[in-house]
Image (tube, helix red, strand yellow):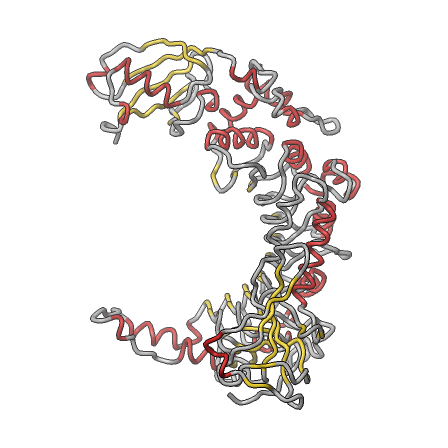
Length: 594
């Protein structure tokens, strides 16, 4: 393999693996490198114990092919796309940038949660054992292909079907090949994983209709290359650069294309920018995003962020995705929202948020007030994803309901031990009740009847010990009980979790209409425990009306509902459907439903 002219920060291929050149120079002549087998001396950090230890595995199959390299030979220090070391025999030649960043993240999270019950869980996934290590290799690497080569391979080369297809024939294949070979017909260009590192000769290409460009997991590392590519797409609306590790702006001598314009200036129409797994600093990502005048959606997933420092106002984006980072402080989130003045969708799934506003402070509502001066600063947020964080108490989620009063879409689940489906259903109804404008919870739409039932059920729980914190009063606002009782009337409240097992009965009217035989039977008025489950009621109805248990379908109506609602969750208690005295339960059969 011929040697190429390499530079620090360049993305390269070596034996099928992708890495970044972090160092080049001469090393000790005792360093052995697999010249013929392409096996390298590898090192990785073992984070299973308190002390970090270096492991240097060797493949015995290729041991005889390993030669010693003279000190006069220049080698490259490669950081593969994971955590690694950059030292040999105690001499540090270069640092693993990602490893150093993740070690700093781990140190900060450990400090914040030290001494709490979250201490162990919050750091275990930050550094993972046996990540692909750094290596010293000869400069016999591949620097990828040009954008023009990737276009020709993907769209302009008529590859014949492989033999593995056998006798299968793609009807209309010739027409499809002809259509996609006309680049002016394309609306989407997908070149993810194509190992693109430079532009090439694209003078013959025209992408006049393309709106989406996917360049994830390539070998791009210069912003000037991105600018050159974007110049070919005048109507581009979405750009995905995920998985490319770019030189920082300060290291990049030229961050503009040959015409002197930045990538943003070339695209007034770009509205979605995806920079996941690029390890860009938050400051640089925001600086780049601000230069796109039409940008509405910005994705910065898995970039190892802890703090989200931002000084200037960002006017454009309405959606920001910060999933799978290490953000722990609500203070950062509140400050960020006040700067993103058009933001309505904030995705924070898979971070380290708990009840901490900042270190030592746990009153979320007061912290939000201190930062913004008024809760109205957060009223623009209509969609919030905070699932897979460390939020383990109802006080925190109740504060969130007060801070974000206009939420329409929420993804959230308490950070607790595994829950039964019945308990999850209870939690769902409590969340629905304390977010009065919520329309979608965890991807499931909230119907009008589900909200009515949830709010009625909540009134029986809100003063219990477990859910007492949901009744907190924020400023002059009403408590949730004060808001809901005028709508649904007062309900008997159980004071403690233990009292929830106290037997209380409700009177129901059971009406059979499963088939002609049961339909002839008279309705039966029956008292049943309010904590009876739907399955318990099905068993009772099976005995009373002689209908096969497996065929029973229950629907309910309070006498004022225009339609009956089905009771599909057999583990749910009747009161979870908001069922109370004098409700009508109709017993139907799967065999006769249309």
